[in-house]
Length: 95
Image (cartoon, rainbow, N blue to C red):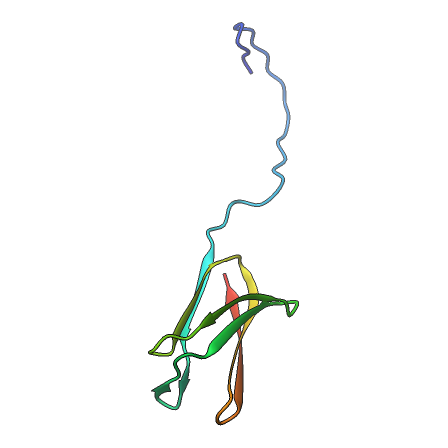
């Protein structure tokens, strides 16, 4: 090691890294369909692995939805429609 005054010293040592490397946020995207028909305007809820709602979006005119800025982990997507009454749950993992 050399300090600002030009003094030099050498010694053995170790460095311990604490924490995690930065991870880019992930995304989940999909399309809600019944058969081959897109399902627009449905609420899609994303819950974490503890069952807490993280985000909610509405499906677009083509049934599509997207969640951005997600930390790695396990999630569940849930959507429901009232007529005919149906609910869908899909587990997903953000790597």
